[in-house]
Length: 185
Image (cartoon, rainbow, N blue to C red; front, side):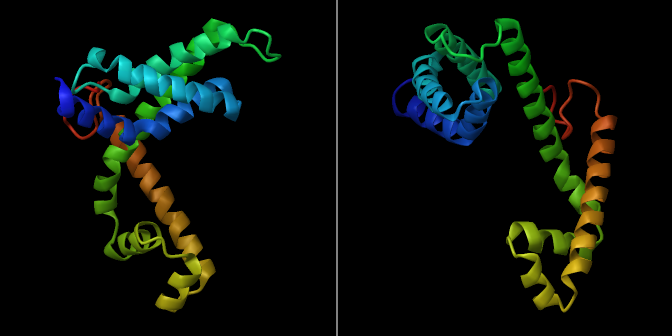
């Protein structure tokens, strides 16, 4: 792919995942100034290497791998820093970060099915609180319920959703996507 289509594809993928890439670099470097510098270098490297990306595969995983090598380059150039991790630890941290992203994505994929299992009143409360971003006090005023009661109800609903999500993921064969769309990339 070349020209405007390639540029559009890159921009769309990068925009969808730039926060995840930044968080990955921040987890590896800890220092926000260094993270910003490496994020900029990574952004350029991703564009330069975009021809190597396989369309349809996991862009975030690919981008985080590129970012990992940019972090290593940054560390090599600045060896005089006080806090240094060896490359094996850096690799382990990078892999754990990506594993965590996979788990979050799997949870996001099963959440709609778990929301559908909630009683309508619970589902409406969650949607009002999180989709419309109403505060608890606004919800309490509008529904005539006590704020404390709403907090307790939301906590109960969150626990029920988490249990549903964990059960759905436990039932998913390893390596399969929880939504039934085939292997994870």
